[in-house]
Image (cartoon, rainbow, N blue to C red; front, side, top):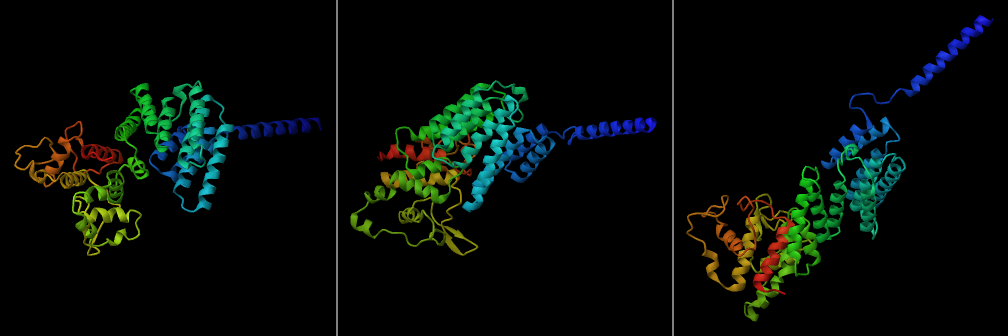
Length: 403
């Protein structure tokens, strides 16, 4: 009996030991199958706006270690980005609440300063994306201050790699809040932090954009349309019409240059079909009424009709045509239209003297209304970004003495 009990005890002990070992076996044991790796990959997928793939990576990181806070921080950003594109308020609310819950989980599971840093930056980004409260910018600033107080080992900062990442996203928040001067200063802090930072090139792009906006706003009060347009990476034809009307008062400006009787009869010949329901219909009609070159209706082969094409981006050469035409109409100087004809050599390697837009380009650049690149090129076919459009209109206002 004693032998039987002894053998049975040994079997029970072995079963217990085996059971304990089984429980301790890691869920993820591949070389790159670990929470930190999946989190970094998820964040890089977020940079490319691949939300579903990023979510899968964060979920894998959480599966590998359900106490890994940064996985929830990443999922919070995913849910916020999903909410931002939802048109249905009910669905938007669900995604926003999920983002909030993941933020709470990220904070609860922040076992290291580096994890808490990831939480604060996720919180900054979520508040910036959702703008759910009137004080959203203040919430972002609080997270920024808390992140900067942390004593982190930058070598252990997964994905963010450096403390200056917090300054970059603070700059992005100020840009979203239309706090252009503060955004420029914050981006400048990132550039000055360390040249080899992964955030330096992104911050430099942000600094250039906000610097142009700050210069454009110097000494002027920009209207609501102008502030929205200033943030755009490219400016649509309808947006440009709104900017010209709001900031230059084109209708009033042109009306003062012709007899009152003729002015009363002046109106657009027709309303393009694609502008009938557009919020900037009147602005487009005003430009058409005065036949502003560069923003005329365009013949569309598919519909066999002249359309305004409101969403099409305005190119730099088209903006040059617009500015030249405004100058010509206001000054009455017909010589502007042919001032640079006959040139044998162009100052811009990508604008030949024989090009139809050469004269317009020369008119705007010699007056410093538009600028070429540091490379010397004008980039005639590139889309105009919002900052340079606002800056060009501001300088044009100065030339025309418009107040």
